[in-house]
Length: 190
Image (cartoon, rainbow, N blue to C red; front, side, top):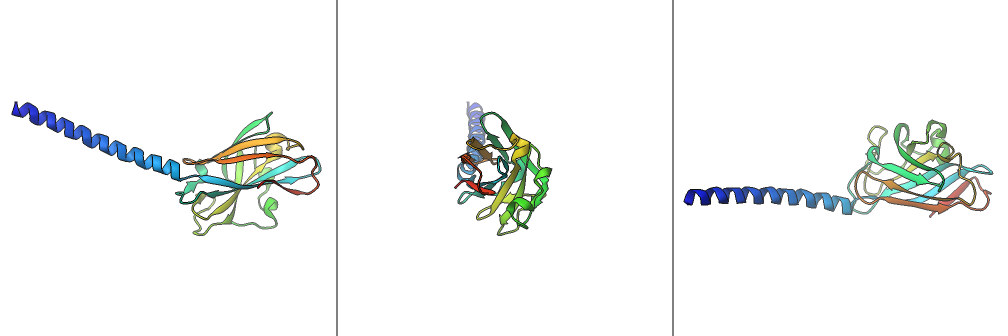
């Protein structure tokens, strides 16, 4: 009986250790998912007289967020007739703005499935073309070719979408285009 009780106790202790380890891992993952993520701060468009041809989505990590690797982030966007899903391409990256935001990256190199990154603020220089990692207080712009995605975005069009990080809270995109395109650069979402 002592031998059976000893074996039973050993099995129970081993099971408790396994459950404790699994609970610890689950707790860490849950904490990461709840406390990490990104925020869409501004969405701007570059327009000709009839269509928006490029979109600039300004994102920053939420307060106290862990690092976000943009290689594993994607954008889902729809204009109610077409839905696109875009992934990062390292061929369209700029560590700074030069010649104006919409002129920094050649938008014709972006397809209906890719977006580029322009760094506005990177405190610790962690965001590069091969490892586009953003962390606290960083600000980057995700540029996409609206002509390739939607054949341009017309006036009076509602556009909604989300920027999904690898884990954590997603950034929300939502705007309606104005009745006319008077200016070349239009603020679409504050």
